[in-house]
Image (cartoon, rainbow, N blue to C red):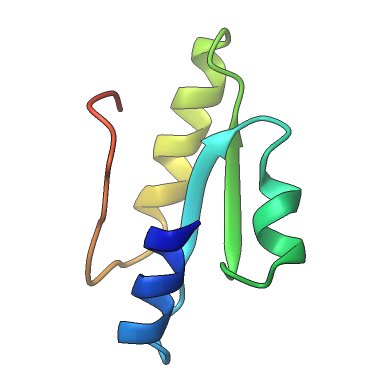
Length: 70
């Protein structure tokens, strides 16, 4: 949450999308920290395929990834 707050402060006019584990997206939406959430069930490969298709439909200026995993 602190990282997303800093990103929001630094880029207030940008759309912020978040990829997170299924069931966690509502927290970020309720805190109004992100504009869009993509939830992934890590046990389902089809979720990753759908995520990739959704991400390819959009254009991003920056990607921040604090994790080693995809």
